[in-house]
Amino acid sequence: MQAEFRTSFVREPNNLRHNPALVLNADYRPLSYYPLSLWPWQEAVKAVWLDRVDIVAEYDDYVHSPSTQIRIPSVVVLKDYVKPQKRVAFTRFNLFLRDEFCCQYCGSKGDLTFDHVVPRASGGITSWENVVAACSRCNLRKGSKSLRQSGMSLRKPPKQPQAEQLRNMGRKFPPNHLHESWLDFLYWDAELEA
Image (cartoon, rainbow, N blue to C red; front, side, top):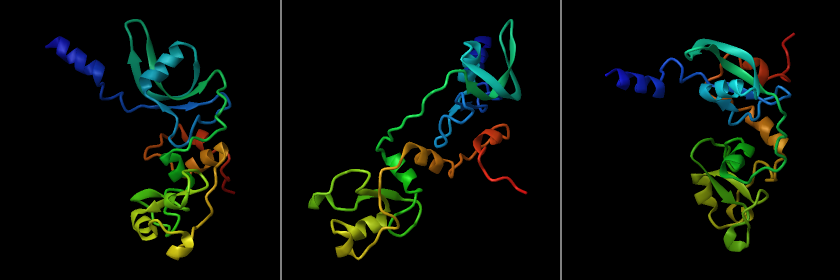
């Protein structure tokens, strides 16, 4: 019975599993905004123990070992700077992020797919410059026709985003949960109220 309790506590310590740590680069910027660079509390404590990060803010909760007690980090900063990637991977997620998660034909949000502006049947290729986010209704309406044939138009021309543009776009879509200790590090360049 006691071993069973101990095992379940170690696997799911209910009061601690929901304490992720915001991970900042050495310049105090998040490694990524969308998805937000978060580590489970266990990874943050391990990184502190291995002297890879400094603790910037902490939760009120503690973790214990037989000889040590440590407050759970809520914000950590890497000791070594990680150079951000300059190349943006062409993925469905990044495409939707570039297009702000809305259909590039009608502007609706939700139920998104992607559409080739120049249809593949007409020689269109799968690239940043030829693929846009589209709702199912608009995608079916356009089909294998050109924009002119379908009578549709794009809200903005598709192009490959720069890595910094995509990171800034991700800041518009914060996660559902933002701990108060994170806010100072997420919006440093936001306009201050007078």
